[in-house]
Length: 336
Ligand SMILES: NC(=O)c1ccc[n+]([C@@H]2O[C@H](COP(=O)([O-])OP(=O)(O)OC[C@H]3O[C@@H](n4cnc5c(N)ncnc54)[C@H](OP(=O)(O)O)[C@@H]3O)[C@@H](O)[C@H]2O)c1
Image (cartoon, rainbow, N blue to C red):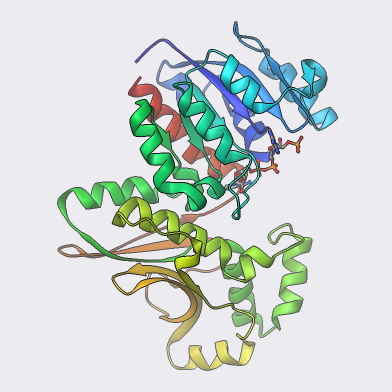
């Protein structure tokens, strides 16, 4: 492993800043491995700051937090593409907002990074949903590493577990509770007998649900994650249009009560198997490991030999997702 890893941050919002704060800690997972990290550029939508000798990350964070952007420290209007093309660096962290229709701006950022020989670590589902095969092939052709553990399951090491399971066994199906917001809503409806709109309003007040919760409630966020999982572990080339989606809006407290009396709960399950890809509210036995509560996620792999393996944990949140981004960065650095 080389001594110092040079990083570019593209997008410096919740996740970027959270990671920045971890990099400043004396006892972070990278320093514990004797790994030196130098942040050479940070760019957001309003501009960017570059110093190939290494930025003063504390100052960059302070400015981003005070002004909502790093632009005033460097060049307002500087674009991410310019920064990626022209800055000498090893790894690009692509952390811009998800666009599931075009994949942009992340798709262009990732392609530019790969074309200029930089490894990419991302939490952005958009580019993977739109162009999974193109990106994995480009990474291969350019000889760069492409890591996206943070796009599925937050802190849960779903993709690395799948890789490990595939080496000595065969994954025949994947089923998962992949969206914490809908799971929180269903859990509270079940426990308190409350209607969906009231629980949703409270979840929005608590910051658990977005102001516009459409992507979560219509199952689209779950569909994105099942597409990424299916493509990377079952070798498919699926896109969102391949997923059959059913929304949770028809689920009532009464339906949850009746299910419970029969020994089941209702969970929004994303699944991928030989019949195809789907997202739908499904009955799950109360004693099955997929019957998780609150904002927890759970992913169950059905295997030819091992039968079932289920993994559970927190699927979102800046701190939890940082854990996945840091693991990816460490893996990239170890292979440099
Ligand atoms: N937060 C989580 O818990 C979590 C978990 C898993 C995955 N993710 C995914 O990770 C990504 C980042 O999440 P986040 O919570 O950090 O989002 P965020 O707080 O909205 O931050 C996004 C950042 O990207 C910047 N940006 C937007 N357009 C840009 C462009 N064209 N060029 C350069 N920078 C641009 C924004 O700059 P401005 O502020 O100047 O607009 C902002 O700094 C998203 O795709 C999200 O879906 C998030």
